[in-house]
Image (cartoon, rainbow, N blue to C red; front, side):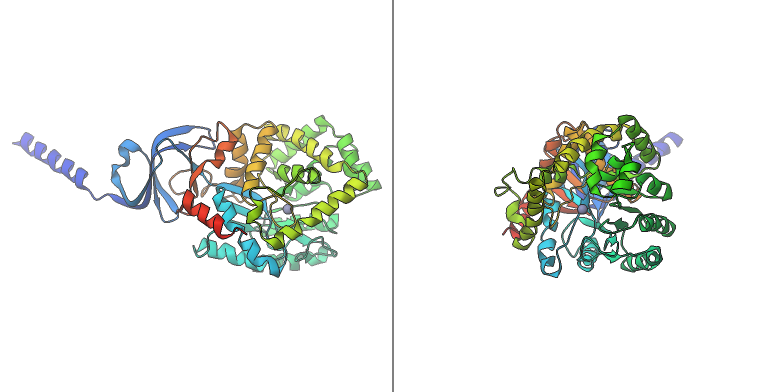
Length: 465
Ligand SMILES: [Zn+2]
């Protein structure tokens, strides 16, 4: 009797298990090989369930029966990884170029870039509006983190900057940024004094804001690090710290004119100490290698047939002239600083990575930065990292892992795991084997919204000139 009852009970439970309602998701990606960018593992036969903008579950295909969804993407023989982050982009050029800047947004998505860090410009109100609209699903584009206006001295290099003439102006400048609800603080060195540079770092640190940017050449990056500096853009400032003659050269000429002598006296042992300190303090360095190469070769390369040029508005194209004129002046003056910078920068990448300095992939794309195209240039930057000695996986980490880490957002991004934001790339080929395989995108998910190849093509077509 007891045995029969037990048998019946097991039977009922089994039926209950088989007919229990399935968990419903909005989308299932099936048969995927998930690429774990942190560990380098490739995990085949996976199902990813997505609800709204979030990954709700990841299962082996054999255990995927508990989920149902109205949409399914079969990723058989394909690779799934988190979306790319471009950590240095610009939207700028004044009110007349707002629409052309907005037209750059689809270029990012079409190249698998699902998040950008805007490094400041003069159309901050528009950028902050796009940030909110993209977040709300009312505008198509990558998630935006923005510094809002740059902080510069009394004679700023770029329009739209907040002028911080002396230390007394720092609280009001940071108040303005707080009111705009910017995501971090970007400094620029048009005329920023070193006292103000140090003062901004310390004051922003107290308010809980991350700081990065350019540095006045009169200042010392390692002193900035002691005060709480979180990042540095381009390699001039790290490079300066790697010359034992930095102090004496600063006394003679505290400007970029010292770079030739800095490069000539670069000391690899001193550099190791500098990298160690940057690593210990987790200071995020954005080398911007691709733009360095592009600008150093700008007079020798014909860009008229660049495949992405037709997607750039005529107003933005006009802003490209400034860099070309600048390069002509430099050439006439016999300056070879840019190409020396480019070469030394490439040499610094591998030692920095090996010391644990967190590198960031940033393209510096946007108006005024000639022929550095939104979306495509991030891939060029990752290729430069590989040329400099990183493996494709290590290069990808500078975007997918270090990007979110700069903003302390590791819990929401950086892997295809439950609870993370559904910013996802589906790729035909494995980018761990070859960095160029990152371009084999068949679908991009931005906050759970699916863009198939055809959707991406149409978005690109809509902004073509
Ligand atoms: Zn920039």
